[in-house]
Image (cartoon, rainbow, N blue to C red; front, top):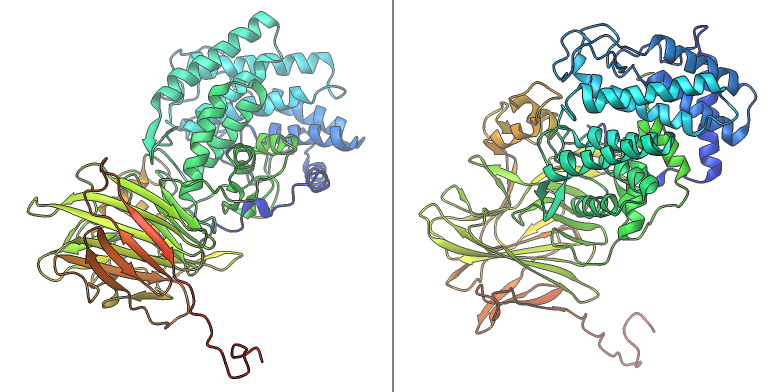
Length: 630
């Protein structure tokens, strides 16, 4: 079974001017074939997200006319704009809408569903989207619109802005992507207004960003991020927020949008595996957006010098929104407009600067959460999630059913690179079930194809083991597929793959077809699509787990666990360990590492020395040449 949403890296999409001209030409042909006598460009099957969609296609036609001057397009633009102004502008309060601050204001808004009282909760973002489509049409109106319809559209845009910022509460769904989109709409609208009125709208937009968005950011992995539906980051909406921040920076030049976008981009870069896979977030744990992410990933990838385009998008939405039959939909059309206007290309090489919450080299990557526990491991083409034992989630030693990974003090990190090897040492104070303080030292070393994990902790009672991950997905290149196999994994001690005994919602068996997102929704307190369904995953009692026993030959006062991901299947893995006055020496077939004492250096910081093993020189042969070269 393939995961439905995370498909190809978005930087694989051609982004030359010729490619975008072809996209616009295809949009124009679809729209001209669809337009109704009344001027509607909506998809016939559209029910949700419908209030702005015809206007969105109108904006694409206006841009297509700018690019190609197709004489068929100006009449279509005028007819479709007239349709929106006549049929899709609502001024009477929607039945049941709960977020009004002023009743019967008479201000215009766009409906999420046209029928009165049907899902009115979506009217706020639909109006943001409609305002964005409107300002895009205004931006491309020269030579297309007469003064009267252009003025009517401008007055409508001002009305939309008033409804969003005065008649209703701001950002009622607590979704940063919608809120930043509203700010962008205000900044773009301000450019079309007389100076005094424009400055008033611009100032209001900047205040809303500062007070309603920036002040409410949530800290995650060392960064302050705009919140999405109760969490700091969402796989679907986070990159969309990044695109809105990119547009805000492009049109305003305000430093605050660049700073906040850089922070979000660096956090996203740390989350993403080398293969572009990501999992986690409050609303959609695995769903990825498509073209809506391109602007932000491309803009901020260039700014921070990272290959953010490796992000796997839903390439069924590769260029614009589509319906199940593949037909064009105008929803999010503004993102395609801005994407086409943003002419510089992708930054395609990885960032080389060490990142606290990531270890990455070649085809291997480890993303770490706030506790510096791996949240996702990619090695040998397999993606591993944190496993679950007795309702405890993570990677780390387990003793008497208790997982030692929750920090009880400051977590310290040391990054080392030899050029051939990249390593991260994480020193974490934890307490066991008896509240005894333990020091867990976790060393992660990679050569770009293999990952060695060594975990050392003071000797534990009973029969401890290392909870070493939940094999969840594998990379097929074109797609990501589900898996329950811990392929190409070796342990210095016993290594076993276990599955939970129960088959119910609170036990996740990787062999089942249900996805992590579906399991999270099944346990969530809120209905699908609202609140923070990803909280449901925290209610999981147990999961499939890779468990590694203690490695033989460890010093008497330590338990040491060692696992290798990747490499030649079946290749021997026999690391050795030696305690000395300066710490623990670990020797493998690829490196020798000296892990310093848990107390650290004079400042308490971890100490790590790493040296790659050199292959032994070939023995001379009687002919004077190494074997195989005669």
